[in-house]
Length: 330
Ligand code: GDP
Image (tube, rainbow, N blue to C red; front, side):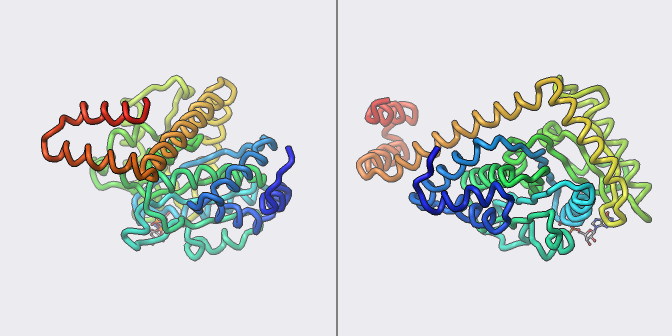
């Protein structure tokens, strides 16, 4: 289909050719909340979708200090060494608030950032989770169109961001530190349930025995936790790695590839993607509706009035909501 917008018309062939500057420019476009930019972003994504390119989307979560950037750099270099093109994105809803470490920071992955087969995009300083989700999903689609084979999405192990990343990836990996004794580091059950694989990092030097114990603890916990139909026998696995000494990375990749291939073969891969696409569509509609509620002054005034009445105890929440929806014609 013909593209009328000059910026979109310029970006499409350049992204399809894998031009990194065009990709970076396009990601900046999808990060913008301006209405005209949103329209351009939608046209761009629509034009690129036709290419039908697909990367393996891998989510990686872990608490600060567990070794995410060290791992991503070593793992990324191992993949580019195999001839694969690797993109790294980050979901960090906390960065704007805390001013803390920026995920996907190029200075933390210096060798990978200089690799012509790799593309690293730091997290934008945008605090709102919904906006981060959309931006990241769209950035993933852009990286796929640009011909990347693997898209790694890094996130900190805090609250909702993990769910968000798990919902937009094919494989969700938890990176853990070696634990002392038999503590399971207070990992929330829900997060364990989302994990397709647990990698226990720092399995080197003095930490190696603790790391190996931690691996078997998690392996046991994962076995108890679930047997999902979308996993072959023996999955989900817990494995030791050392990002620092570049040990176990190849095995981890082999296991990820085995799992992804099995899921493709059994239809789980496409089903998960289809469900994710549907979820994406629905949340776009939901956010669009909410944005409209907030923009329209008449609706806004009614929302405020009803909200105040509920707060004063003069109206029940359910009844007030019904009145609001009736006013909207719903
Ligand atoms: P992030 O905050 O999760 O990105 O963690 P970093 O990658 O910045 O690593 C935090 C610290 O752990 C750094 O001092 C790293 O050198 C160290 N580290 C990372 N990976 C390993 C590893 O495999 N073994 C050891 N011993 N230390 C590691």
